[in-house]
Image (cartoon, rainbow, N blue to C red; front, side, top):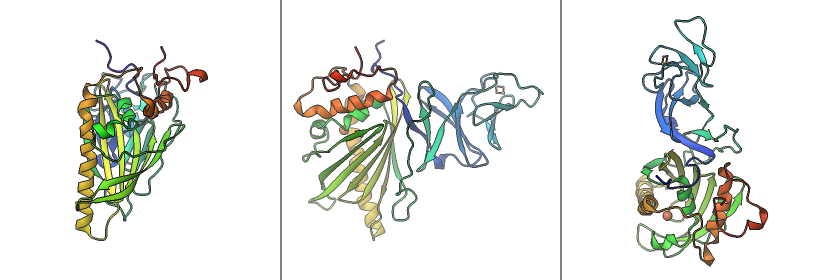
Length: 331
Ligand code: FES
Ligand SMILES: [Fe+2]
């Protein structure tokens, strides 16, 4: 069967695989992301670790019945223990650990309440970090409210959507299209736009929309206007055809707690609704390597040129064609 998307479903990047609150000290979580079964555990030292799920001894899933001991996880089947680096540290009934007794480990970064892993097809080290954000665990901001979706699409399609200016009108019905000034720098994309939004009380209010993306897996969208809001958007490939998208919202508290909750919830519902408007398109569309773009649709081409860096399988594009067509895949 033809693949829906011609490139790897897993571009290089940091991906959220758990929330910090899901993984208490001594906790174990079975996970399935990036087309692989994984296990996350938090050692007694408080450090979150992620390994491939299957024990190299006889194949038990470490996430189902595995037990944390110190900084290691003990397999539920025959009690072998593995460190966060994946090496076997103990076979309880043998003096000698078989050579090669190890399970693949993942580089973990826990920040802003997310347990994130670094993906690179050749296991190259991270080429960027995930910085701490000021709004997280800040008294002036509400705790995160979350929405989560499983979508039959590719992570690239979701990233591209934000650069598709015309769809904001035809899918989302936005009258005042934001005119961002996008900046692509290394793995980051930033933009700033002025907006006009409806208020929950009727009428409209002017605001701003600032986007800061780090690769495809993590994006921060800051809104001012109705209520100061930060949306942390995390998208993680599940398998070749599905992604998990999560929106984590926090709003700057208004003096009145009830008003914060009401205005915040209304705004969050609206932003989540906009994502849900995109889902039927994403779930059924095909990916065109050579889309037929109009004059004003340059940002899609710019996005695709930026996106190439996350696919190491693509050869660098010769400079002379750099401004030509928005082709993501070399022919
Ligand atoms: S399968 Fe894990 S210890 Fe035997
Ligand atoms: Fe959209």
